[in-house]
Amino acid sequence: MILSAAEAASTTHDMPWWAFVIFIGFVIAMLLVDLKFFHTEAHTPTLKESGAWVTVWVSLALIFGIGIWVFQGGTAGGEFFAGYLIEYSLSVDNMFVFVLIFSYFQVPLAFQHQVLFYGILGAMIFRGIFILAGTALINNFEWVIYIFGAFLIFTAFRIAFGNEEVHPENNPVLKFARKRLRTTTEFDGQKLFTMENGVRAATPLLITLIFIEVTDIVFAVDSIPAIFSVTRDPFIVLTSNVFAILGLRALYFLLAGSMNKLHLLKYGLAIILAFVGVKMLLEAVDFHFAIWISLSVIIGVLALTAFLSFKIAPKEGHTLAGDTPNIPP
Image 1 (tube, rainbow, N blue to C red):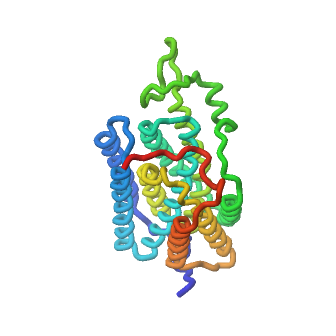
Image 2: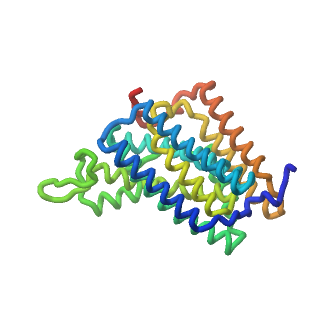
Image 3: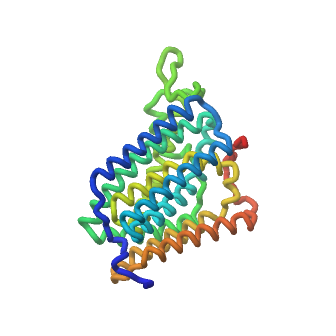
């Protein structure tokens, strides 16, 4: 069947409370292992190291999705993979901005890993809050889903045709932080605070972290509504988001030096967001896409975008404004 109400995004799968506890415990354990055993000192992750970590996170997501497919059925499994691909592709788009932010604040490569670690930790907390709020809104006010759909279509046009330049110096949050915090222009290793003339001062690393967190909150406003186009199940929404975020840091160091080669990615993301936005609006007339159609569209668009990005050279002037980092092999 091309259309199936039974496979509509409104489906929930009644995951038990202990599944949430086990998953959160797993995430905490993996973060501690990463922090305590693999990144105890400031260093620049090599391409080989980053590639290994990307493989680990993607493999864990794949195993987890297969587990959902086996124990909860094909619809639930398809929803997880569709949600994961949407969030992962949007996370790749985030990295374009991260490169510009690190370039603007001149953060050494060896220190970027720690900023991304705490940034991702904060991102998971904020997105968890957004997911709870979004689920509550949709459950109590069904019409909110149509607002989400219209917003995603607007976002798709903004991504495809808008100006992507980032100007941190004009950001009100950055101005507020510099006004309220005593800051120094010098880095002190990986420290967020240092002593300057006997007074505690925030290092550029803390200011960068604040900017990264604010940026991710802005991106979450786009990504959370997108996942609700695929599923309303809070467990699948949460797990697909978290798995996508966990792999972001390693993916950054793997792809950061070749961001300009993915110059067509934004058009693929725009198509996906427009598709899921229309998908949401069509629910008003009880028109639902089967999950396999959504999954096929997402995979097809991402694959075509990646292929064309490497086949078609970017136009002159259509490159990142900041310096792309030189990651060792």
